[in-house]
Image (cartoon, rainbow, N blue to C red):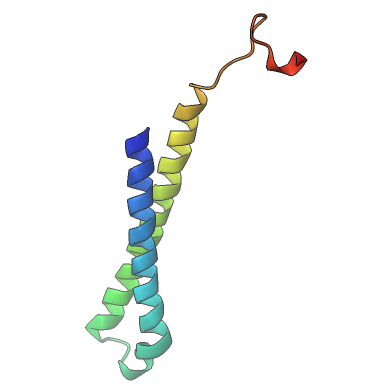
Amino acid sequence: MRGLGIGALILAVLSFILWLASWVFWTFLAASFSGNHPLNYVARTSSVISTIFEYLAIALISIALIIGAKYLVKPTDQNNFYQR
């Protein structure tokens, strides 16, 4: 479960870096390049990869939460937290 959390953190950081690079390109640099310039395709690809990484990070966090929920203490007759 720790590996899933670390993997999700790495994917989230990479996603943010790619998003930031793409945002800088589209905000400040895109006007100086024509529509068919290779850097436009690189920026589009960076945006797509950033989105995919973000969805993978969310999926890993969800899986880690589901796995972690199995380790929660379940209330029984001897250990009932709701009656305290």
